[in-house]
Image (cartoon, rainbow, N blue to C red; front, top):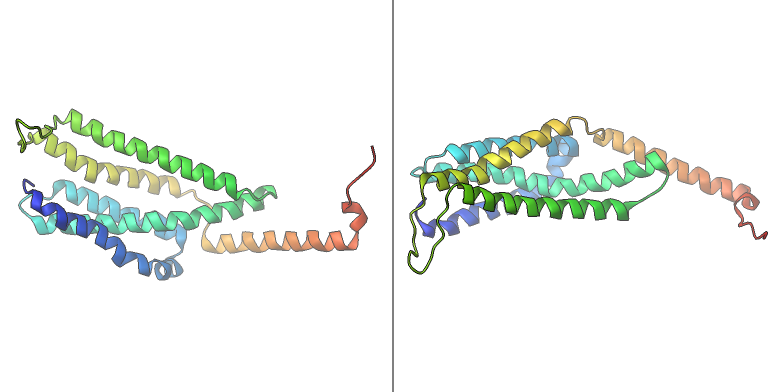
Length: 212
């Protein structure tokens, strides 16, 4: 936008919206369910991202508004995904009879770090393709070409919107609604209680075999 002094306000809106939204997320989940919240919070990312890309630089209020809308989606996604991760552990135990939260959390953490690295690389690549001019001692305040401006806006606006849209389409097949999750959890607990009862009734069947 040609004014480095606006960075503070933009950062404040981008970060502050998270502080505003996060305390209300438990109530939002209780009202709509984790699956619906996670899937449809992508709408905020799409609307905010597309709006941010097309917002004129001279309409700073619109830039802040679209950035805040996009931030609402990001806040919901970054919070709800950890709840979904825990649900996945329960689902895996229900399907296989084995609880493997360590492997699930490790795989999730690894995947998240890899995609974050790819995201950073994509941003740098977009700047290079757009012809971004880095500041130097000779030219401390370079004027960016239009192609670089478009690349920046596409990276922070359109790219997240496209990714959110793809995620929403994929997530349609996610099988765990809150109601289904409760059924799975109750069934798993029933199995555990039945196994404990069987062990008490027939302890010899569960004793280790010490025969050579």
